[in-house]
Each structure stands twice: as structure tokens, then as C-alpha cells.
Image 1 (spheres, rainbow, N blue to C red):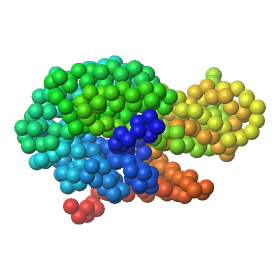
Image 2 (image 1 turned 90 degrees about the horizontal axis):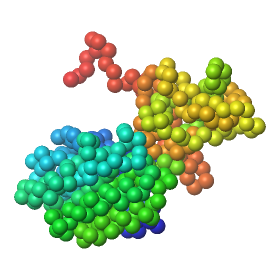
Image 3 (image 1 turned 180 degrees about the vertical axis):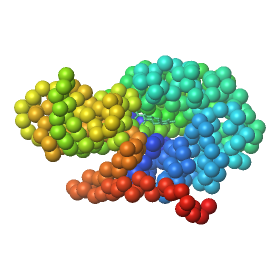
Image 4 (image 1 turned 45 degrees about the vertical axis):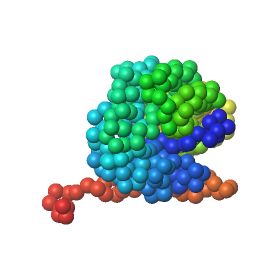
Length: 354
Ligand code: LLP
């Protein structure tokens, strides 16, 4: 990423994987954070990220996010004109622009289409910058994020092109934030070139907000074979599923699967999780040696939006997370227990203390 983007300022989109051990390492590497919830802001603070290392974003920010962002000196992404009046006094802000483009990704992951809930229109952007200045804020510049897991670099060319057309109306700006969204196989040098050209057109510093690209391939979900079932299809029943990795169910995402036992391929198998839902499949049509109960499978590209989108549905306790570093493993999240899952619940009649 550095080879492609040079000295662009990096704000890690921590929604991809917010584990504190990871955040601390990224912070030590000079990376800032993009946050979209009170909890993410609290994590950033814990990892020592504040001031010009912190962006507070989101389409429906709460009062607590404005307050925490102000206390930490964050830059706010303004997502609608009405937010100008909600920002804490003398805030630093970028205006998120929706370039109204169809992009090459799953519908749920497209954020820059005309009908999406994000950003202000191209026509509104110059007015919102002016309104920020008139209200005593620092209008740093523009922000654009057209979606996630985008396969075709031309989508970025189109988006940055539309933004650049605003130059005549906005004049020079201090910052252009080109967002994230780079698919794992995307042409990164190509995207970086276009982003840099757009920033140059405004005389602006370039900021980026990668999530997936930084962490997806660094993470693997390990799951164990519980048994098999042959109906019309071959099922390998495994002990992880939608609660640990939701992406196959939610987006039809295909994650690479590697069996960690030896043998000749013995047909194709669907990896079925333990949940009582038909959609709870981790993968379909994977060539595997005959599955053996107890054997392990590695599900790849799980470092982004894996653990961070896990749930405790079915009172399933989340698995442990481990980090490989300096030739050894260390636990960076202990395995949950069922008690962890119900800890915040209050039984009728208990005194809550308010
Ligand atoms: N900046 C903004 C404003 C974003 O909304 C996002 C992601 C990013 C940066 C980082 O995007 P990335 O580089 O990771 O594509 N749960 C989905 C992904 C949702 C991404 C939401 N916003 C998934 O599992 O694919």
C-alpha cells in the first residue's frame, strides 16, 4: 500500500478489525483511525489515537460521538448539510460527497450510488463547505468513499473524476480523503494514481481510509470438522458458521478454504455451520479429501469483517483470536464463555442500580 500511495495519510477503517492489539501495532506504524461509533472512538483513544490521527464518520452520529470527537480533537466527516449546525464549535471537517455512481460490488457494499444514504450530492458540496466556514469551522476539504470490495479500478477513476469537476466551484482545498474500498485484487497503483491526481487538482494533501486491504489476508478462521452428511449434496459439518464469519451468508462472499489434513480429493463439499438456519454455509462446492471428524479447515481472507461482524446469536460464545508475531503465537482475545454472552442481562426483580 505504501508503494502505491507513498506518503498519503492513512486512517485505518477499524470496522474491518478493531482488536486493540492490532490497533496498537497499526498506531505504532504511524497509522490513524476512522471511527463510526462511540465504541470505535473509545478504542481509538485506548490505542492512543487522537487529534490528527482520528476521523469521526457516520451517517447518523450521536451527541456522544460529537462530544468525544471534540474532546479528542478529531476531524469530522460531514454526511449531510444539517450536520453543520450539530458540530462542536470550531471543528475540523471534511464534506462527504456522493458521486452518484454504480460500482462493481455487491449492492449492500455500494455507498456512492445515487440512492445510497451516504454523503451530500455533488451540487450541494460547495454550499456545505461555505456553510462550514460561515459557522466558524475549518472546512478541510472533501471526502469520498464509493463502497467496499470494489473490483474495477475504473470505478475509482469515475468517482475521483466527478469530484475533480467541483474544483472550479470550491477553489483549492487542504485535504482530499479518497476513502477505502479497494478490492483485494484491485489495481492499487492505478487507484493511487487517480487519487493523487484528484488531490493535486485541488492542491490538497491525500488521505485514505483502507480497511479490508490492510487486514483481510492477514486473518484466517480455523474451524473443525464435526462430521459429514450426504443428501442431494455433500455436507462437511463444521463448528464455525454465520456467527463467526457472516460474509458468505450476507454477501454471498467466497472465502478460500484449505483443508489441513492429507488425502486425495474426494468430491465437492458444502461447509455447513452449526446454526439452525439454511443460509448458514461458510462455502459451497469446495474440493476436499474425505472429511474426517476433528480435522481442521482454514478459511482465508477472514482478517477483515470476520471477528468484527461476529455475533453471539444462539448464545454462541465467540472464539479466541491469536496473533502470529516474531515467530510465535500470542492470544489477543480469549475464548468467550456463555457467561460473557449474558453478562449484561438483568433478571426481572434484580436491582439494576439505575
Ligand atoms: N471509509 C468509509 C467511510 C467506510 O464506510 C469504509 C467501509 C471504509 C473506509 C473501509 O472500506 P474497505 O477498505 O474495508 O473496503 N462488512 C462489509 C464491508 C463494509 C464496509 C463498510 N465501510 C464486508 O464484510 O465486506
